Image (cartoon, rainbow, N blue to C red; front, side, top):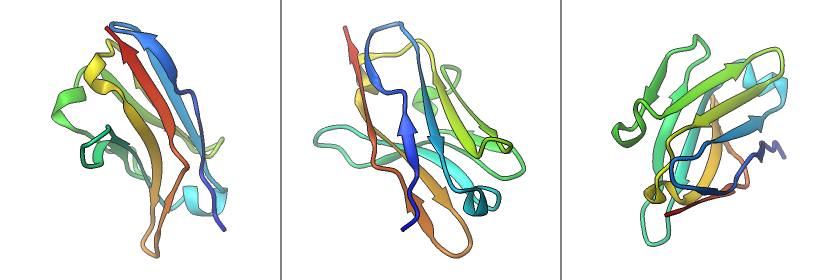
Length: 115
């Protein structure tokens, strides 16, 4: 059972910052597009940001200019730097690794932004 391990969630005031980390086994990380999804209570899960093996990134409009996704291939880890957080960013954030064979998920980490 492949497992992605996330860390970095927590409680922060509006305007603050958090950095999420997600590590994956090297055998899948090296060939996977890594993504961060979030799901707020009563809402559908949405893609927040993704980064390909080549380093190309994409973001949902609501986080552009505030969040940055990056990957460290030497550490098999993807990061999501979240700045200028807003209460509407409150959600469970989950890491995702998508390869040509299948998709893997982390267990999720709670991010709560207080106003």
